[in-house]
Image (cartoon, rainbow, N blue to C red; front, top):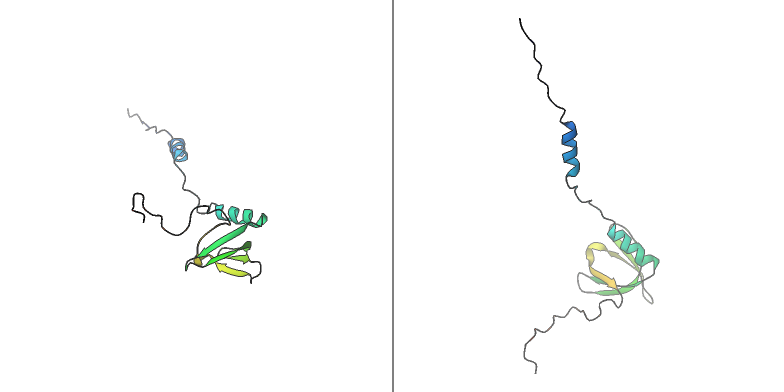
Length: 112
């Protein structure tokens, strides 16, 4: 007499799905932070300072932007289309406070 025995395996798909849902997801490639910042500055017509890679300082209000450029509306001067890759940094006018681009003196250095 021969007995057929079947191997009973549990369904592991539910366990695998539970493990995969607990893993951290990769951060999004685009956070929309840049778009939020530009829209906020445009809607408030905030005076901005744009410093280019070659050190030129431009003042104006951001009129519009896209993936590659911003349009800077300037008073008493022609409007400019500034490519984003040419921008070193930008800030609201008057926000730099005591910061400037000159290096600070080291503390304890002799002053004449």
